[in-house]
Image 1 (cartoon, rainbow, N blue to C red):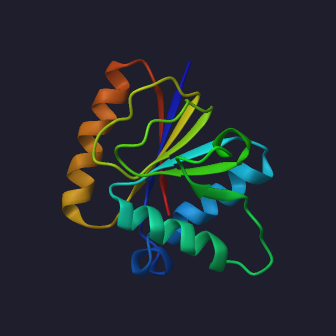
Image 2: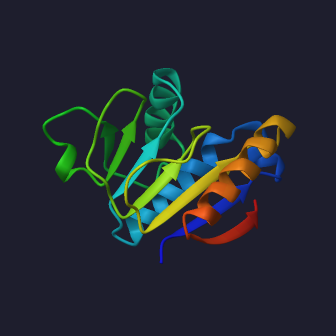
Length: 140
């Protein structure tokens, strides 16, 4: 059964820079050898995630790149802005306002502290539930 985990940002560290949580999740996925997609809302967010993955921890190296290159299949973490098609992977970190299409073993939903973000996450929660996903929520 596929699983969707919702990470609700609450800690000051992540409130100030929500993409830090995305980097932490990508680091955990890489350490667990889980090929990962990060679906971003737009190209600017994709670039911000790309840059932050280089800088957020000087001791961590996470092989990553923006999707759309010949090396996509060999890169541990692919950052995917809208309009770029990629093959499904077992793990997906979703930053978009909609549930992703495709087949994934696990989806990680990163939800900012903003009330509007929380409303959208409730809609996605219901959609995942209707699609038969096992659901979990974590306060971060």
